[in-house]
Image 1 (cartoon, rainbow, N blue to C red):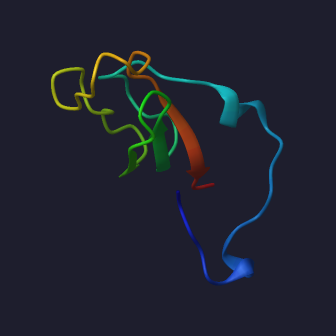
Image 2: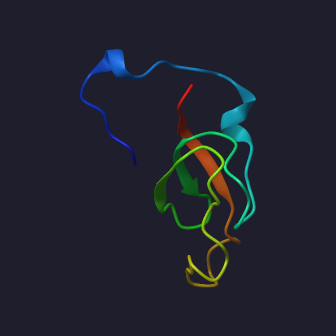
Amino acid sequence: MALYQRQNDLSYSSSPVFTTTYEPGASAPFGGIYKCTGCGLEIGIAKFHVLPPQNHHQHPSRYTPIRWQPVTIHT
């Protein structure tokens, strides 16, 4: 889970951007923190960089397939 110390560094948003998920190996449309919806691993990534591919991030089969969902985005 991402943590923060200074409230002025973050702003709340109800944008649907935060409910969209992305396939492994997809281009990140926003820079920020993304979370694997299966196991909860969080990564930081720059805008338009490639999200970790299927063979880079593995987790046990008891979890759902790897999908990346934005937790924070840089605007």
